[in-house]
Image 1 (spheres, rainbow, N blue to C red):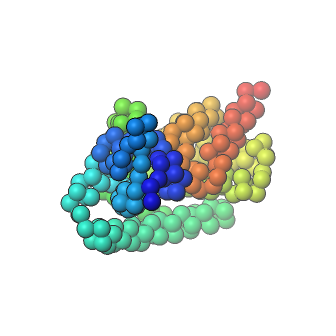
Image 2: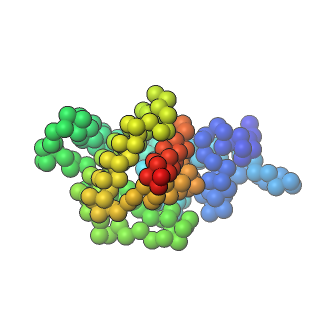
Image 3: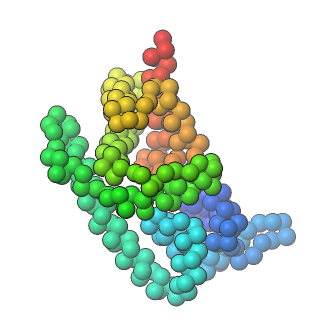
Length: 249
């Protein structure tokens, strides 16, 4: 069977823009291009795309994926390696999720969590690995270079826990059909802004609106939020904008 780029996008959840970029950098070339300029993909290309997406889940950079696929021509061996790497990552993420879950329980009770348990997340080297792909993405898309050498792992673990808790709160509010001007959302935004300011990330309601808008405009962040809950990126922006307007009045 053969598929157009739009059909591949619909089938795999990969955006057309991303597929075009993969073609441009030589990561995933179509089996042929029609005289009208349409990219056509076959089963071999779909199998390669599957492997690419697995590596993306492992936070491999595009250059590293190309290298990995060039070095591993055997599909079965490649899948076995990916299975091992994803299993190891799953175990690590299970530990982080458990820490986040425990943090939420203590926060809801208004109690302080044991500090020895609070930072059972990523260490500095693991954070550098996780952020490497984002660093490459920011350079390619915005010509902005993120400093991942001087990161504070403990601080990032705290922010990661807070970000997960905040977005989960919004996702549940959206799922339960809370109106964007709900007082509970206002209180949550204020609490989140206070957290950011207390962790050397100066933020006010206007800047939160700008962040929310960036999450809509940027493919990476929008896909991340929409993957958590359909409509979450737009809901976040609407809630933030309403809160900012109320503050101005």
